[in-house]
Every structure is written in C-alpha cells, then in structure tokens.
Image (cartoon, rainbow, N blue to C red; front, side):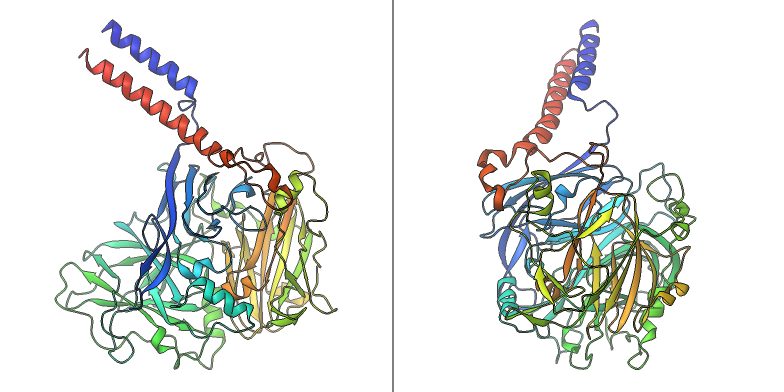
Length: 591
C-alpha cells in the first residue's frame, strides 16, 4: 500500500507538471481528413467534398468553454480553409478560416485549428470557405452544449437531431466558379438535399426512381431537439414537418421566446433549434419538407427537399400531398412578420449564470454607423462583380491580420465608406475601421431583386429592425431596443433593409459578407478591423506557433512548421494519458 500511495503522489505531480490538473477548461479533439469522394445524392455520380469519408461531415460536439482542436488534413488537389460559422473565436481571428484573415492550407498539408468556445452555447455549422467549395460539400454540424450547472430553458429533450438542408447542383464547385467567372448566373439548382441525400419520391413525375433519401427515426411521445441549418448555395427554404408543430427554442447561440410554428423560413447560412414532440398517431410516416422561397415556386417544384419522419411503430409509408407552404405570393410581409416574431428570451440563462438578456443593448450609445447597400451584379473593369456600397472586395494575397502582425504596408485600405459611394463602383481591398469597445450600427440595404443573407464572423449581433423600402434616419423609431434576437446571420429581403447593432469587444479582423455563395464569390464582402491600442494577450491571443504564411510572407513558411502547434497540444495530452495509463497499470499489480 505504501508503494501504491507513492505512485498516487507521483501521479499528482505529473498532473501538475503537464498542466492538465490546473483547472483549465477541457479540450475536445477532432481529426478531419478533407478529400474528394464520388456520391450520387440526386442519382447522378459526381465529385463531392467529404470529411473523413463522410458527406456531410461529422458533427463537432463541444461544451461551453471547451477548447476545440481540429487537425485538418487537406487531401484535395486545391487549397482549403474551414470556417466555423457562428462560432465566435474569442480573441483569435487567427482561427476563423476565411481568406482575408488566414492563409489557406495547401494540398497534402495538415494544419490544426485551436480555439475556445468561450461563453457560448447553441447550434452552428462548419464548411470550407474558399471560392465555391461549400457547393460541393465539406460541411457539418457544430453543437455547443450548456455546462451541467447552467440550466436550459426547457425540459431536456430525449435526443438531438441534426438536419442540414441546402440547394444542390450536379456540377461541382469548380464548374460553378467557371460559370460565374464567365459572367453567367448559376441558374436553377438541380435539387435540394437533406443531410446529403435527395428527395423522397413523393411524386413520380418530379422525383425519379433510385434516389436515396433521409429517414429520421423517432419514438412516439418523445420530444426531440432538431437543429436545422441551411448550408446551401443561395436558396431560402420554408421548413416544415407534416402534422407537427415546431417550437422554436434557439437560434445561433441565443435562446428564443418559445413559440409554435407550423413552418419557418430558413435563409442561407442560418441555424435554428426546434423542439418537436412526436404526438401524432403512427398510421403512417410523415413528410419533412424544405421548399424553395422567393423564387418562381411553380417552376422550382422539382427542387423541393423531402425526407421522412418515421415513428418506430409506424404502420405505413407517408402518402398524399406535401404539407402546404405559406400562401403569401401576394403578401410580401408574411415572411418578414414571421422573422420579426423571433425574439430573444431575456429571462433565460445563456452560457453563463447571469441572464443572457442582461445586456441592455438599447441603452448603449452608437459610436459608428455604416450603411451597406448591395445592388444587382455590375461590370467593373470588364468583369461581372457584386458590390457592397459600391466596392467589390478583392482578397489580398497576404491576409489582413498577418499584414498587421508584420507591419506590412499597402496590403489593404482602411477606408471603407460609411455610406454607399456615389462614384462608379470599384474593386478594392477596402475594410472597415472598427472602434474597439465601440457600438456599431449597420444597416444592410438590399437593392437587389434576390433575397440575401449576411453574416459576421467573431460576433453575435442584435437584430433590431427590418422593413421594406429605403432605410432613413426616421427608421430608428421602429427599432426593437429590448429583446431583438442576437445571432450571426440575418436575411435582408429584396427591396428592404435590416438593421443590426454590434458591440465591438472581440479584437481581430472579422469578415462581414453575404452568405449567398454566388454573390460572395463575386465580391460582396468586407472586413471589420478591431484593434486594442494597448497590445496584450488578454484581448487577443498571440499569433499561433503553427501560423501559415503566404503572399508577401511566403518566405517565412517552412514545411515542418505545419504540425508544430498540433504536436504541442496533442502531444501534451497524449503524454499525460500515457503516463496515467502506465501508473494505473503499475498500481493494479499491487492490488
């Protein structure tokens, strides 16, 4: 026994030396092998991007304050970056995975993302952010659970169900990119996928034989949390489940006031959590539907996504017509009113013990105002481009944050206009100069004829207003200054505006963009640069040991640097567990 106690004392010392018993938040580790595979989601063999051989990729499952470590092996024949949509890399835009901030991971290389999901909960997703790669796959869900000591504002569901919906082309992302480069529109998608699978054959005319469809198995009487994400290219969807109510509970990290919906519009890049109780009889299965919105729906019927909700005691297949979509062809306000009805649950706890609604955003003075207006594509220097406020963004060869770190000049301009340009549109690397700890008001004005979604990395912003027409100073009188939802992706209706408020407390260089892949690819984005004048590691983590270098800094890149940070993080963990196993094995010999 004395020897046993000796080994236990040694174990304690090892823990202290390795640093894993010091009260640090735990880590979750993932290996992502990004590669091409052949799949036939719409019955036609095509090349898709898979993660670990799976399409869609595996779900990342973490808990508030966890450190997330994802080692990405790039087996593609092109560069790749992985973006964590809606997950806020607090103090570390080095890990954001977008081209204006990070150098891409070259083919046959691996690189490790490391970030903390600090004070966050909710439903998110990841995807490859370069060019049009998301149109070929590479996406998956990302769940951040509450810590056990923080209650959720509803009874614990019986299970989580991940649902990824999106429009889909049988042409791969490189073919779609070539079409856009040639000045063409992408045209109507070839179908809609639900969890990487095509539609159930609810109609033999519209859906051919032999298509694999998604089946979600449930038990009668149980309540499930459905985490639904629109990971598609550019189409908004109306999501509904035949004969079932959707209780909206959370959106992109914020608990919502719980309301019953029979259907809800989900726009590109958006994520929602619904509580669904399986309270119907089991005479048959039920349809799960994602149908296109804000298009000529009579022509788009063939691209409706249909999956099956299957009760374990179901007595037959789903039959009959699909549940009806909203009948609002001549009522443009239906969807907008539905969006306005989504409110923040200010009485619920978030990731911390204090109520998430304690942040009284409506009483904070605004320090900066930006009106970001988009228009239909236009010709600039002989190229068909999209713009924000008259500027079509050009990604620099040296990422912005890296240029700042090494004090490089001429990489970008800190002159993005507060108001749309009156001069001819131009192509530039022009970004917004954000004020650290400032409070920014951004008006997203959509003067295009198509629905647009906008996303900002590194932040959740407050959605305070939306309406049709041109935004004016008087529009502020309609703002919701109390319980507007906090989220990271918001829709802007054609011929309408949406106003958001952003508390600029996260130091770094953060992307603000349309989530519609075609308009994003053609230049509808910029960055917000947030700098703390007092440089310290408390407001921004230092450049990581495994930082990639490109552009003007390519000379600094060494092949052996690629796995440096990964080896440090993973190596420390492996060392601890190896020592622990050896000590436990020795102890067991003396019992």
